Length: 417
Image (cartoon, rainbow, N blue to C red; front, side, top):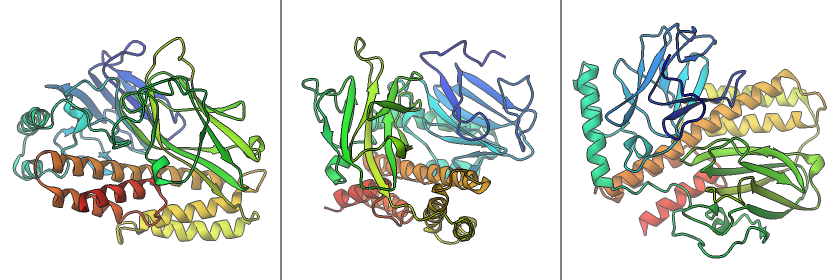
């Protein structure tokens, strides 16, 4: 079909498989994509719960839309079931078809492109439209008008969700100057790389930290990574992985466990851009955290017990707001009791998948809260509505050291001054 782009285009959108056997695989499209389990579709997904013709994505009046094609099991947008009317998509949204989840990303977020900046879920006007309209055409026209209106109101500047202050540096090249990692809020809020918020690290960012033992996890957000292998992660001179594609927007909640056999007492962790020099490729990272945790002796029985407790919290996530995060902490605790095993059991893989699912859902709550708060401020609804959106999201996070909690709390404190 004609929706599939030939190779990688400079415009259009990409669908990234975030779970399943092809996890991490990207599919590029120009203007539309039909999704289903047979070869007649632009994207064929062979998985339980996916219908022959399941859903369609297309562009109308500059807005990217998602429509479920009457599938047996329905489609979900950021965890919410899609109705019979088209839904507006924005950069970073998660789409679920059957047992598979995809992430929608714009290949190039054009200036003024409403799908790069807006998600109308929860908007008063859109809520009214959901109740009153019975046809997709009327709703599509309303969404297109809303999109144009918001672009005019918000202006052309894209919302900067990472690093909220002014540019840190636009001066000399500090690519070869090591930066000492700290757990401080000041470091947490910094942006590094070669982009709008920092141009002093075009080739690489070198971080230095002291290893105190146990398991070490690198958490961060990234943007501007639009080529496979563009940004690699190096630990003490050895490559340990690549930063996944982010396209033009920020991708939050990225995580990587640092291999214990490559850790030393004093360490250098490097984000290396393989294109600079000779190029001037843009890339940025922020919300960097290097988390070190003690690992208890391996205990499969205790891991199973902790897994069951966490699974109950996950199943009861709708009962109390904080249960989702408590489940995440519980699954992480269960995983620790399996880390010391040379051969990981099947349970370990199940725990890893649940952690990734919950982490992704929490990151989406975080992103949507920031967006809703910024939108409330910019369209003149005042800080009360912005504070409400942020406070609702804060209740999901029970760990005050979580990067999402810290950023939401920082925003709340700024609005409360």
